[in-house]
Length: 138
Image (cartoon, rainbow, N blue to C red; front, side, top):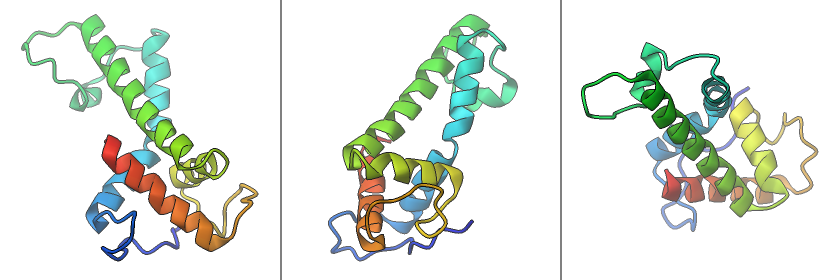
C-alpha cells in the first residue's frame, strides 16, 4: 500500500516541508493506533510501562516509580494523539479525518476505503496542508 504522493514538493508551495520532515511525520501518524493501544492499557491499568515504553519517558530524576512513569507516558501519548487529530480537523472538517485514516492505515487516494468527495488534486493539496499543520505542532 504505497503512497502515490511525491515526498518532496516545491519550496514555493504554501505547504512546503522538507522531504525528511514529511517522512518523519508520516511515520509518526502511522504510529497512532499503537499510541492509542498503549494509552488505553495504561489508563485502564492493564499494564505498567514496559522497558520499550521508556523511550517516551524522561522524568530525569533517576528513580523508578511505575505510577509516575505511567502518568507521564499517558500524558505524552494523549498529547501525540491530540496533535494528530487537531491537525486533521483543522485541515478540513470532512476530508481531514479521511486523510488521517488513510495515512495511519497506509492508504493513498486511489486505494482509500473512504468515499472521498473531492478530486485527487484537492485531496493531495489538503494532504500537504495536514502535514504542514502537523509539522507546526510536533
